[in-house]
Image (spheres, helix red, strand yellow):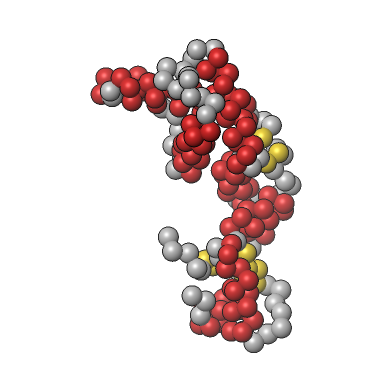
Length: 189
């Protein structure tokens, strides 16, 4: 996975080097680097996970400006938003299950997947006649819940997917990234 040849190529570069590996492989990558390079230390090679890279970019560009929330925080906010929509009678299908753990888990997965895939909430009216009424109503409800979640988060909180988008934006302004050569190893996809 971490070949001596790879580390020799990395070493030959004059730039600051960042080796990005899966989080569970950072220690083994560091050990492999020490063995392959035969050195007791190095200052121009940084081995880190994607999360550590994201944190470092945000730190070096002045911080996120908003409070990061965890999956539990996302669940609490979704419970509040979905509950308020259900109480107001604004949900067509999910009103009775809006506070249920399994529904909230599915709603969180929907939000995470849509953010990770850069899918934005659509106006279903353009193709609603092609959808079954039940599917249309389910998508309508999920869209309402997602919009309420985004409104609640706006300007106050940031979840891990927002943090990734924020770090990607900040990377453009990060001199540390601009002056570095990035290497990736240990990923399967």
